Amino acid sequence: MKKLTRDSTFIVDALRESSILVVNSDGKKVKRLYPFHFSEVEDPKLCTVLVENLPEDHSLNNLQRMFGAAGK
Image (cartoon, rainbow, N blue to C red; front, side, top):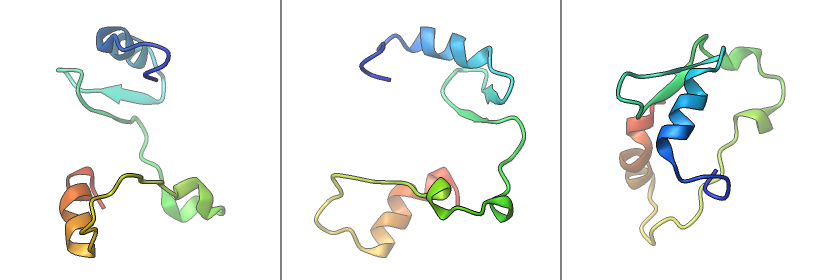
């Protein structure tokens, strides 16, 4: 995204046109209109997140603290 534009207003306006995403009123959060059901996923690669540049102390507790705000 950063290579395409850094204009957050442009990105938020584009996301608001989506038929599958919802943007909150201040334009800072995006979620699916219809929740994704993990039980329907057959390929685990579709649910994999790659995280780079973790701090040296990347213990389970620290990871939960860093990413816990995003959900389960």
